[in-house]
Amino acid sequence: MTTLEARWAPPGSNVPSYTVADGVDDALRLAPTYIIVGEVRRGDAALALFRAMMSDHAGLTTFHADGPEHAAYRISIIMYSDAAVRTEAARGMFAEAVDLVVQIGWRNDRRVGLGVWEVAGLAGGEVKFRQLWQPGDEGLASTTRRRG
Image (cartoon, rainbow, N blue to C red; front, side, top):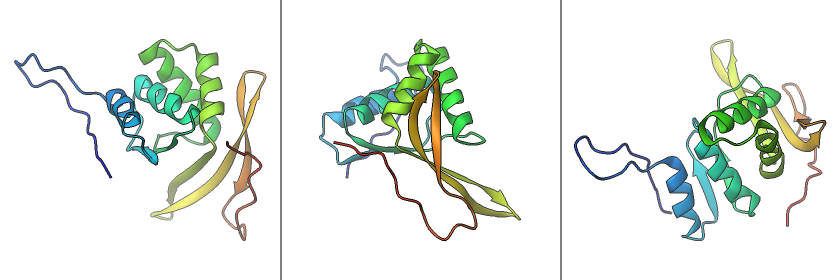
């Protein structure tokens, strides 16, 4: 396992910053089994991770949103503002790169699973989801999406 960490440019130095996007790009050169980004906060990081995942590299990240639709919407906005990716293209990348969305939240002062959704594709320019699990379900429904 190899860990790469983003860092700001040292003050007063000519050494440039090393971004999450730089780390994802460098990780691809190492032929990884999977790429984990601790949290996507910027559009350039999402763009780099989605590009890697669209080339069949397994990836995992966290992102703050109120549900799967909100996650796809927010990702498209930050990819537009930070990386100049049109929101329609960003939603298309999300639908192509992401297989599952797992939502974790707080209930009764405990962190719990709130749902699991499979990305079902793009329809009318919006990312569509199929719920595979919600609290109270006995198990996880089978996924229909196939890779490779």
